[in-house]
Length: 186
Image (cartoon, rainbow, N blue to C red; front, side):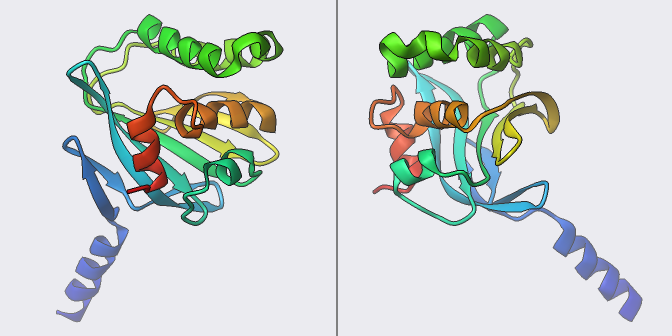
């Protein structure tokens, strides 16, 4: 009987813990990438028109509401996009990212052309309901793009990480509601 209880306890401890449900999708309270354990800072819903597109979440080493410190820090962090909408084409994904980058960068877009091209090439597949895109910054490595846990590419440089995280966290973002929810701002 003791062995059975130890087995059950071990199974329960191995199951992921979920602390938030957004748009019907469970978001874990922590994510582990390499040696880094990141905590859920905040999460919200990305909508376009009246469609729910994805549950978006920000994961950090420790919680923070300071967008500027988050964007500029050279610490591990991640953004998770757990898709609700089924059938987002590769071109819809890349067009959306390009629009966000151009909006943030204005005339400085050409400075990042190489990194943006590398980043956009990661989104070369159609995205379906329950697909999970993770954008993970690892100091000294760069910004990793993962689809359902499989690496699609790595873009080096802290400057590019700052740009990608600004898409979600900058006051200039085109996603103001999601920004506030990811930052945990009431």
